[in-house]
Length: 505
Image (tube, rainbow, N blue to C red; front, side):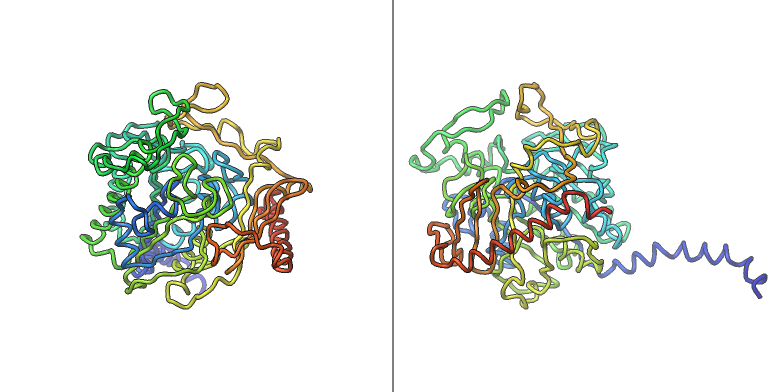
């Protein structure tokens, strides 16, 4: 019997392999398309729907009105690279050595795009990357983390940006950067549709990160800001020299607001295209900022602190999403949510198991369905500035970490370069000093903030009653603070264990 079947095996195997793409296509037919949009340095209050007195954001306002509005959404880090790592890995950024902006993640991390591609999605990244060099050969470019194609930049960019396509040499593009990214994403969507695949896309804008530049039509919207608004001098980068200069804040904000309005318009272009192609109903479109408002732009922030702080002003960001097929009616949620949750949520949507390693987020699908009224676990924040100061063996060959896409701002240290390289160090041992640095734990009512080194200050806030974190109530609730401090310390131990590389063994 065996001898009679053997001649047929090659034919049967060939038939099976030929049907695999059809099986994947059929499996993906009902999967939702997913697009994650990320603003660069876009703070919580900088939308009209959150009450900004001057900003025009009609598209985000409409999404907040008709979709799911996440009022208490947080960036997993208080600055750029850290938050991007939380989205891509579902893990706190310090687990993979992403201490501060310009520190890369590690090749052993499991990227969200890899999981989505495994689920049958066409995967594309457009815009800022900031998790490693985007060039070919980099073990941390978007392709290495699971993207089929990418048009990327190592860091931030302005009008007429320079991008690398699939790791190739930098190319100059003419136009408004947000609209360029959306146009590229639209072409990718059209290709995915021709192939019969659902699509997973990340569009990581360069706006409204400084230095600021905008189209005349967008600047004109803010020609008449009040004379007493932003009436002070602030420091930022010069578009002409790349060096730090001081300017009137009102003029700076005019340009910043214009960038936000252009970004908002590009989201509208994307939504219109999805509607025209009759795929908007089954597309999850999720927008958020990556950290709070930077210091030079703080003018109407209702919270304490700004970018790089673990106070609300540094980590609370705007977030809205649409998915008409799953969220047919407008919903406003006051549940604490964070960028780390995106990973678990999308894995569940795609029907994929999460990696067997420590994760820091939760799935928000119950919230989408109105079944989550409070968060089942706290959210922890921890800045890596002190860890970044420690010297260690480079995790990768420095040549692999060299950036190629230029930015306006001169690199620090007097190198004269307009590009940015990346760092990541090995950290094989945990030392007592490693637990230092600004950190916080947020539960459904209270937030513990710990800062300093040898004798760190400790503050406790009821952020529901006191979102501006004006009143330290630690003396009134010492038992709450003690409990939260124990939770925070235990979580830090887990993070530092990951940092040593233990999760990769």
